[in-house]
Amino acid sequence: MDAGQLPHGKVAGNKQRNWGATLDDFYWVQRTAEAPSVTTMSGSRLAAWMKQIGEVEHAKEEIALAEKEDQPREIFPCDIGRLLEDRDPSILTSKRLEHLDVYSRTESDGEEVTFIFPFANHEENETYTFQQRIPFHLLPKRLIVHDEGGTLRVSKGDRPFSLSPPKTIHVYRLHLSSHAEERSRQQCAVVQKEHAVANSEGGIFFDCASLPSPTCCMGPNSEEIFARFPKVPEPPLSTPEAHLYLSSERVIGRGHHSTVYRAEWEVPRTWLPSFRPRVCEQCASLALLEKFKKDMPDVEVDETEYVENQISTFLKESARRLAAAGLSREDASKTKMRCGYSVRQIGIDVQWQSPGTYCEHENHRSNRMTFRTLVSAKLSFKHDNQLRHEAKNYQKFPAHFFQHWNGYNIVKPLHDPTPIGAVVPQFYGYYVPENGDDDQGYLSPILLLEDCGTPIDVETLDIDDRFECASLLFRFHGAGWSHGSVYARNIVMQHGDIQDWPTYRKHSDRRFRLIDFGRSEKGDTTEESWAAQKLLMVGKCERVGKLGKSAAG
Image (tube, rainbow, N blue to C red; front, top):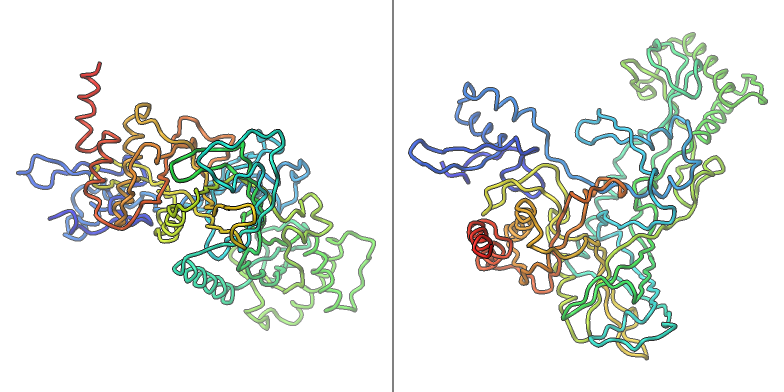
């Protein structure tokens, strides 16, 4: 049977048919006894095929391994928000709702817990590269550009030296294609719909035996309660404004059509997982106490006691009254399962908090609403349309071009597994001057992108690196895209995995990305595939490359 007719096994988001969680999850297969060649195939796909044809009695061990193999899952960047928080030593508290800030829980099974201390070795004022994906609807509508050194007036010639470069401020606006605008509206609609149907699961368990810490193994008449928070506020549907800081001294690269700068981008902290809405535990305790006082005004408590002790008094009285009335009368909607038994729940009126609205109990958190991060700002020369074309391409690229996945793929025409990182940098918007060029002349549009490192030197790459670079181009081709400029300068390299904390990223872990899509378009990729194999000495050109090096030696 042709490989294309085989059933799918486990598949990552890019829909490549051969996916394996590890290199051990791939097999060499001789399709028929008469054929001397072998094919590399994933274990999950082979297992699916054997089940389909009813041959599960064969290779039982391999089928069992395929079934136990990890599932494909998207990999996300480390949350640099935790690094921003951890700069303040007072964040290290023993409060029970805070201890998760120094743990990392894997997304695969939700069970493995690893101690990590991201705050151990980072510089106090270090600015980190931004690597998160931002949906179209959250890209800033206006960009306040602080230009030091006249970078926006891009010129092919060198600028005259100046002891005090001019500092100017310009206002830019987001310019999206009609396709991206429609995607933005769809994204907003999805966010609103998901929020409308979502239930509030947030809350805190209280019991009178050990307040505010929860306990398990309580009976059905337990003096325990689940204080349910109000529904979390709707996520933001837009970002009105952000700031960009450009300097002529921070050039990353120059080309025939553009200049690229490393820039600081000041954006909302709420973009980061660490700064999503939260509830203060002490505010929740006070809200529960007020609720009890309102519902049971006849119960006397000593208001000089700790809040927890006052709550304990109400809990005991509430449990006594409930037992007297009969637990069977309790409405099922007012209970919550905990450790295999039902616990009463009660709604409390407490505010969700985020940067700018933290209460007095959260004074160890910063109320700054923005932070600075590093991005690439690509500017174009006057009368050059490649930057605009590149921006349109970024808005057309499929989602999996921007995604990182665990495991490996075998990407045609390669025969060996390669990692599944993102193919292209993250897109952070295409911005044009709000009022066009000013009275001093040309102002370049700005394409904001993830900074993914420096161009590769093919001669310094080992065979694994070259295969990984080639797989990016072949995945690009697999989606029907021709790059249009297959050169080493358009493949960049950075060190370390995005999910690792910056301090712990290994220099030996090289990761790659394609850049420069000003000439890219949908079309035939046959000639470009051959050019990629020659450039990187892989596939049909791998043997030629080795022979060439031997002859040169």
